[in-house]
Amino acid sequence: MSTQPAPAPLLIACALGIEHLALRLGDGSGAGGPVTVVRTGMGPRAAERSVSRALAGPPLEDAAVLATGFCAGLAPGMHPGDLVVAEETRDPRGTVPCVGTEPLVKELARTLPGRTVHTGPLTGSDHVVRGPERSELRATGAIAVDMESAATLLTAVRAGARPVAAVRVVVDAPEHELVRIGTVRGGISAFRVLRSVLPTFFEWHRNVLLPRR
Image 1: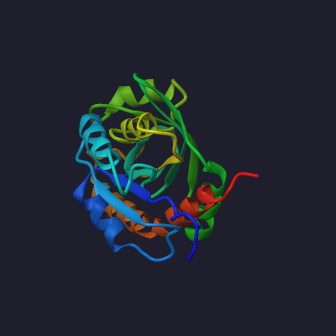
Image 2: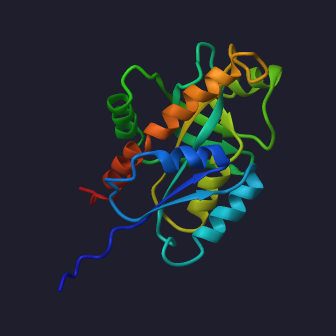
């Protein structure tokens, strides 16, 4: 009888129904262990409640956690469909370093050739960011903002030591704000990208499960 422990599961957290749909439509094969995709609901409080509940007991109490979905890009030159890999997430309650960022970036570039991948701090907000506030957040060093990633990762690490990461797809950017007519095209582009990233998340999961040397 095998004495090898079962691989730690992976919890993928997103907020919106359309994000959840994109992930369900993605390729579900090749995970390094059991995978659960949770729709948290919109906003940091909803994310905190949902992730706390998911990690409270078996089978996910020791799960690696990856926050994903759409985001607003803060840097000039970003476009809908670009990818953001967080080096850390931050909000007023704290900063959480992400694990395995470099191999995640490389795998995304391999899986989605031609898509720009941005790396840097991902900041949290409790509301949709518009206009001048975008520049204010950019001045803090953040490259993108969303409402759930920071809360998701902070809740995850407070529940116990585990690998965490955040990957977001830009749907809204300084030159492509949601209020503009290009929103529909940008949203479709972002949806297609999010639908394609699950194999990359599984590769990240396998990588962070490998023993440290």
